[in-house]
Length: 594
Image (cartoon, rainbow, N blue to C red; front, side, top):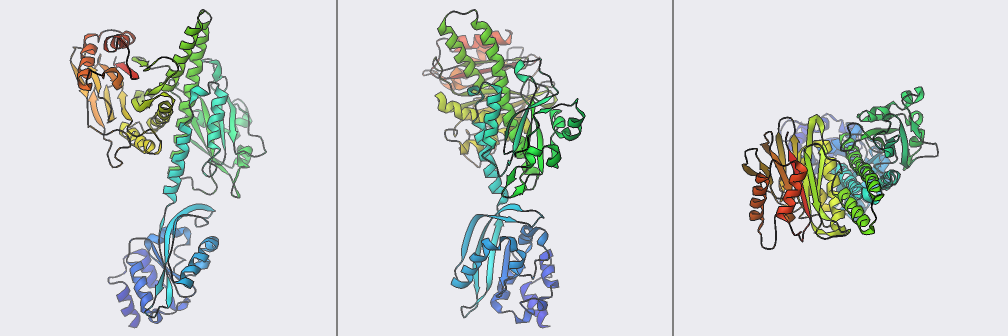
């Protein structure tokens, strides 16, 4: 009867949660705490608070620190639950006792609480040495006389948040690799992999393979893979060439060949498959698993290579980890694609230079090539035309940018953006935003998701807040266009009969202005023969010309000249709207639906 009365006081209603039921069913008389009726009132009160709370809590009772916990805390125990109920703290958490034991001693000896934020702990709760992070507070539980009857732990696991911030930092670093500064494919590949080398906790090792002969242009052989760069590999050699015509490669390197076919392949047993990668070590753990991902670029239907990323032996290969790897592969594919396009452009420049005599003409063309490589893809799908006009001549670049990304099922992603400022500083910010936008577009195909992701990136990149962007995904078969706008000018649509309209959609603020702002999507339909115009404010705004008036004039000029071919129409818009040049950069992007 005494025990029933105590339980009634601890749990006012019948035990409803798994941990409450586990507590009731535990033989406490067989533990170091003894039967419930011997527990002091202060301890019983703390246990009641713990078991009825939805926040993760643990009571460590008596000198032996016997554990009583609730359902929220049980999730952090892994496979140590349910055996931890009624067990000693130093036995359950033996693998991290060196870290938390001294903190508990301080609480009990000095009767003062402790607090730890994002404390790094390596524990074996899931059967391997797992990297985890926790924010928690230990508080003494005192009886009316000041004696200590236990310690209360309020805790929350922050592993996912810490890893997300760490991985976002790596993605930002990768976005800073500008392909135009490394026009040689080997240099671009090495620069990208070198960035991965600073993030061994998430990417303990990596190998970048490219299709053999890519630098030779369209005649590249799309079957053999050649190693271009590695990081974190051991003494054993990583295979330099992977050839599907060799039996050994088909058997042991099948995952790489699957990735070359567009799949994401998980490679286990690296000792046999890729021994150089398996010898990578992270805090004493050996890498046994890697993920092979296709490297895709705009304008090519098949991957240009394969990125192999080692999985940390201290982390679980979950959905977040795979999504992070896919983001890295998307960013690296974008830079490599820009490099290949830049090389193709340079070959054309070399051919033109043979017939040119003026050094000034040579410098101007090289400068133009550099600027176009930073702004967007050099090769566009049919029906598109793009123009970029810098605010001043020379090698100055600015923050205006565009991108056209081939997506699945015949869709195409379209992005136009404007970073505050000009010159190399704005260009560096622009490069990071463009890389992030391309990567998220390839992964999600959603304009709203792209703009929301750019909000997060812009908040972390100096100079990026207040940038504007218009992102759209166009289904070329149906003409359906979905778009999201972050403070940018609306798109203009000219119908075949000359009527025009603006794609305003839901008005929204520029990037990183309000972290609570939603990024909705709107939808429209482009009929056959319709012309879509996206631009930056340099095309429509001037010292004596408000933006609204400039937009109306641009719509009128577009309507009047709508029947011109796309390239001629782009030139006509520039010559008509900014005949004498402008003091701001201009990006103009046109698409005519066939």
